Length: 264
Ligand SMILES: NC(=O)c1ccc[n+]([C@@H]2O[C@H](COP(=O)([O-])OP(=O)(O)OC[C@H]3O[C@@H](n4cnc5c(N)ncnc54)[C@H](OP(=O)(O)O)[C@@H]3O)[C@@H](O)[C@H]2O)c1
Image (cartoon, rainbow, N blue to C red; front, top):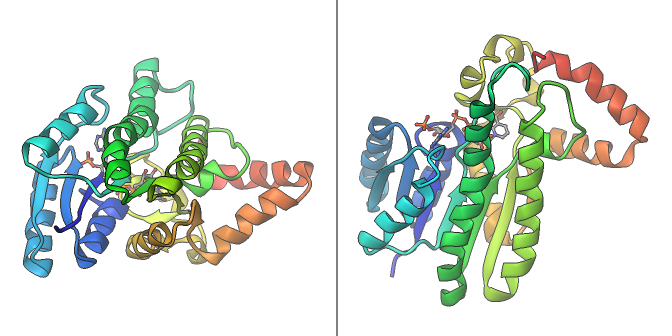
């Protein structure tokens, strides 16, 4: 039986590339996001290129009923999910206090609750079959010290990473691999959505990753069974430096760097 991967946030950026990588490796796909037209274009591309079956589900993960609806549609289509890729995500523009509570609530729903719920919905089937792969897309922002203006983003990514590490330990004896994939700055629509394009465009090119590489490395990492994977030598050095350097120095460096990629 062919394996199936469910990818959230597949309508652009890293998610679209993750869908391409899973398709290239012989998986059928369930792809979801809000923009159905984008998903259908990707489904046609993957079918033409790899001959795989692609099931499209348009869903807004800010809606608390979305994860269970996705699971229901998957079951009704007679599919089982062998690989789950929780990739959908975004950044809120501006500072914590400049957004109303409703925006933060929706943000937490998409960035935390939906991810955890989708894991809770699909991991039992993987455990039962003693085979499965889960990628939760975190960020380098969840591994480095807190910065002003990234107030909730770094916090939710830190939660996703820690949750993924624990889930990996819980599920590995049952044949299920879990990886927190942690990219740094990556070319995608992310910085248009959080309205930081002009500011981050001034960052040096060595800090930028390409979404296809992030996706390829993420696929390899979960297949290898890495619990946390940071893309790129530069970011691995930054994460290591943040861990090993004295706290005062790390905090000073992050206070100096943060205004270059974040408005407060
Ligand atoms: N780009 C970076 O620099 C960077 C760095 C580290 C981590 N990340 C993480 O990588 C992941 C993918 O981001 P990206 O860079 O590829 O950005 P992107 O190009 O903007 O893609 C984000 C994806 O998430 C989907 N999405 C957003 N809100 C959603 C919602 N409410 N319901 C359902 N789907 C939703 C979008 O689809 P629709 O708009 O069609 O719904 C889109 O497919 C995110 O988790 C992000 O936090 C990005």
